[in-house]
Length: 455
Image (cartoon, rainbow, N blue to C red; front, side, top):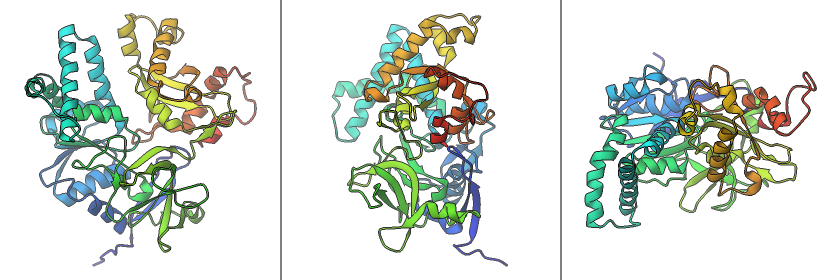
């Protein structure tokens, strides 16, 4: 009878390859167990989840499969993405683990419904959300509701908010989100309707959890605090730790850090250094962020995705893409601009919504919509509005409409993250056109400067 030791190899998971070629991550039994111990109490034996995240990746495998089993909970397997809404009603989960895309779709759906509703219904829904926000602020000790407001909230909660929550069944007590940045507006919206969303952060190399928001201890806009026995350090360009609040590379050490990359000792060495304690291995995530004095971590972008414009100004595309992605008319976006005079954006429009709002008949082909001045003005106006808090040089000056990024065309990972380098490579002609470049078929190596920066 063979009994594995904590240091034995338990899992070989290949990274998603969002910025390059996937690498095999060697996770030991102790890695996964440390993650499960680190979030102990966040799941219960009475919990039921609906699984649609791939178990071949660490987020779904550790956070849903192994954690659910360790806590004695139950997991139903979703029949597929097209059946999510139907399966939510059949399973009636108490917890839900998802990527931002799912929550954003519900957020957009409600916002679109409000916009298209009658004046009375629109006023009821908007008032319900306003009072929902006041309820949240009162619970956090930031405000107090009058008796009239409490009575109005109780009524509108039944009439409006309960119906929105009903899309997830009738028992959902909280949701979890990871895999990409979830806009604070979306998390706040779910708070307002009565479903707390806990955002977490980590990588396959960290089993995957590094930090997480807990239902009883959350801060929207932050990805949470380090889990038990995990230490987070923000490293500066000089190789030394930075003080709280300053931006640098997010690094961590603890029992969650992988053994290494399979058969790639050089690649392993590249992401490891000596931790401040003088003995542990410090893993470099490649992500930019900061940590507050209270231990709250914020992720601001990807170090490898950061680039310079022609004028020397640094661009971190993630927060800009998140701002643009809050547009009701845009479902996906990739920002480009490395070594260029200004930023441009590749956007995937929501054509159905655009047709509805501009009263464009279904018989008009998408090719015509792409060149329609009214469509361009609508989307540009919404982008300008969503980017109003950004610096002028960060806002894209040109936009190109492109086809959806999917797993089928190799532009999405299984957990629905965009493969930036693949998108840039596919649409390099569109990017060049936005800059007015002369496009010569077969010229050069066929790889743009943006592609090299992204890869």
